Amino acid sequence: NAGVTQTPKFQVLKTGQSMTLQCAQDMNHEYMSWYRQDPGMGLRLIHYSVGAGITDQGEVPNGYNVSRSTTEDFPLRLLSAAPSQTSVYFCASSRDRGVDGYTFGSGTRLTVV
Amino acid sequence: AQSVTQPDIHITVSEGASLELRCNYSYGATPYLFWYVQSPGQGLQLLLKYFSGDTLVQGIKGFEAEFKRSQSSFNLRKPSVHWSDAAEYFCAVGDILTGGGNKLTFGTGTQLKVEL
Image (cartoon, rainbow over all chains, first blue to last red; front, side, top):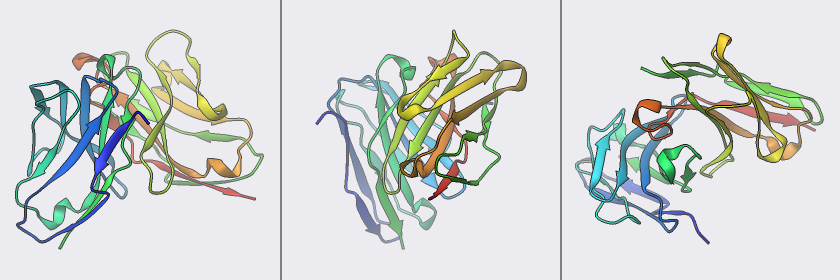
């Protein structure tokens, strides 16, 4: 089925470890974004991309890196995990500047201990 | 900077009753506005969107929303709620300066409970 696929679904990290959250979409969407969701705070934009090779920072980029080497994939890297990065992470994609709305993945629940 | 306020954290309605979820936004120009729904353990699903034209927009699952520029509001409504509508609802505004829907700012969400 077409959509946005995120892996893993669950992850526990120790403080200081690094990891990559994977995101892939098969809809040929140019626009992709990473959000984190925390209780009582809604979703906050981490990084976004408007096409392969082009990325930019969102509202809460510190501690995260992204790259976009292909249209399909948009991985999110945690450089040195901290407890404050415990959250649910959502990847989303859209065509046409996002004006038709975003398609969201099912999320990755990350716990940093 | 753009912002979104959803003043109701939790709302409980009886099945069959009408529903209105409030959303107020702050944005300097005509905004791109969205409502999303999130079921437990799931990602977000787009209910409806507005960026121009008729201020009353229809969405999926029988939902509608009305854009009121004078009140900076984009309230979500449904005439008769079903038990399956229990979920969390998010209002979002898009940044037109960067292309419209690319940098979404979300409200904090309203948790809807439906009593049978």
